[in-house]
Structures are given as C-alpha cells and as structure tokens.
Image (tube, rainbow, N blue to C red):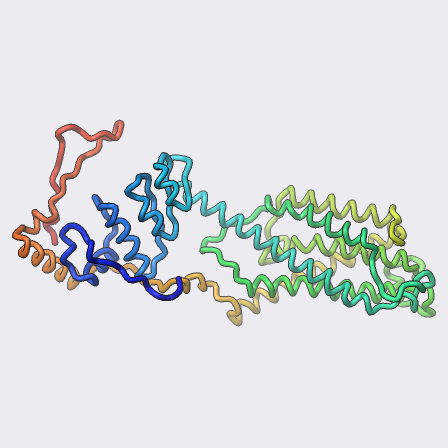
Length: 411
C-alpha cells in the first residue's frame, strides 16, 4: 500500500509451472477463475501475485495449510469449524456454517461506520458551536444592558449550566449507535474533508444563530431605552440578566442536540426516519431542558415564561431548517467541484483488471506447457492428469473405488 509492488519469489513454484517464466506464471494466475489441488505454498503465491497486480485479496480457509495465505491476504476469513492455526491467522472468524455470513458482516460493519461518522460530524459541529459562541460572548458586557449585571464584565453561563448541556445531550445522543442507516454499496472511506466541511457548516451556522439571539437578548436589557427585536422573545419587551442567561441556555441545548438529525443524512433531515431510541432520547433531552428553563433557578439564572420558551423553540426550528439547507448546498458544492474523491480508496493500490487470456495467450501458454513436457519427457496429458475423488452428496464422503481422470486436452 506504500505504492511499491512487492517482489515475488518464483523459484519455489511447484508442479509443471516451475519452469515457466515469472511473467507467464503471473498471467496464468491472473487469467484463472479458480484453482484446485494446490499446495500451501501455492495458495500463498496466488495471494501474493494477486496483491502484486494491485488487487485487494480476501481468503477463506479452515485448515493449517491455509494459515499462510490467510495471514498474507488483506482480509483472512476462517470459516466455522476452522483449526486454531487458521483462526489465529485470520482477521475474521465465522461462527456459523456457510459463507453468506460474510455479507452480513460487511453490511453490519458499513452500518457501524456510518453511525460513527454521523456521530463524529455531530460532535465536531456541537463543539464548534459551543467554543466559538462562548468566545464571541465574552465580548458582550452585561453591565451596559442589565441592571443586575453590573458585576459582570463578560457574558457567561454558570458552570452547572454548561455541564448540563454537555451531560444531557451527549448521554442522549449515544443512542445514535442504534440509529437507522442504509449500508452503502461502495467501500467506505472517511473523506475527512467532507466531514470537516459539513461539520463546519452546521457548527458555524449554529454560532451565527446563537450570536443573533444574544444580540436580541441584549436589546431587551432593562437599562436599554428603546427596544425592537427583543419584543419578539419577551412579552414586555424587556428582561434581566438572569432570564437572558436562561434564554441563551435553552437555545444552546436545543440547537446542539437537534443538530444530530441534520448530521445523520446527506439529504433533507426528514429523508430518513431516525431510530425510535434516538427520537425518544431527543424528546427526553429537550423536555428536561425546557422544564429546567421554565421552573428551575440556579447559578444566577432565572426561569423564563412559557411564551419565551415557545418563541425560542420556533427560533431554533427555523434556524434548523436553514442549517439543513446550507448542508445540502455544501454537499452539492463538494460534488460539483470534486473536493472529495469518492474513488480515493482505490488509490491504495494500483488496480489491474483481471483479463481472460486471448487466443495468442492461450497459444503461448500451450506451447510453454508442451516445452515443459518435452524437457521432462512427458506428454501434456500426463502433466495435467489429476485424480479427482468424487464426493457423495450424502455425508460428503468419498465413494470407495470411484475415481475419474480429468485431462486438460483443450489447451
């Protein structure tokens, strides 16, 4: 994966292929659709040749003889009932019969990846919102707008309020691990540019909404002579410093946790329904936050009226739709200007298509095999004669005495 192709040792090739040129042997392996009756070192070599050609190789096995190839492959899969050596060498161990569970494992892993990615975007966006908002808020002087804020030179929230925001929202958003997602059809990649761009759009738009609300709250300070915008948020168009803190607290709580519904989809937030656990956790978090804002007084914060709470809810929801629309614009710009390469995972290796041997290749292969037979004093038929034990369908045991000889006479 460093971009350099590994060197392959062809000196230990077994069977009739040992006298073939290395390039011819590689072409035979790349052209084949299957291999039978190969030795352990042959399995290892097949995996090695495929990797050298740029393929990402998966290998299944159950015995000790499969262990080297299982270890060599990018993904080694030990099937159900495999030996301890195969299990130790494999990356995945199947616990049920059959290979269909591999598909289930891939589907589950892609779902987990999407949930982790969605949570990361939500968490980065939430962190941007809190950090940058509080950084901007310290430049607001409460003593210039509020009578009971003369002792405060910078706007802040009580430490307990910040802990409440972090604890309640983060604890509830953990239910995203059960969220409903659709597994992607392509191999997954982080695309960190996209993650940070979308997180920044969601986070900084939330910062803008919170700062505009803070300006409106300061406009309603009880030391202000004329008030305009604050009449939207407060029934009597004015407020004190304690209620101003509560309004900002409620806005931060709701806008932070509601971000998860935008971060979890690449389309509109309603394009895919959330899991019941995530939705119920959201209801619990916003209900608890709303009750605290209207009923509880702590750290200098004072309860606000039900009217102010309802207006804050409407304000947050309007901005949530705006933020979701900005997210769609960001995704479209990413696709339009190809900021993120969706096929970048293929650059880990240099993909080489698996082509069939053409007529000239088949003719050359046949001539090479005949030359090997001539030097060994054997016919082509003798080189490729293989005793194949037929397996009975019942019990999978070999039928005693029943053998058939397969001849590759069409070369």
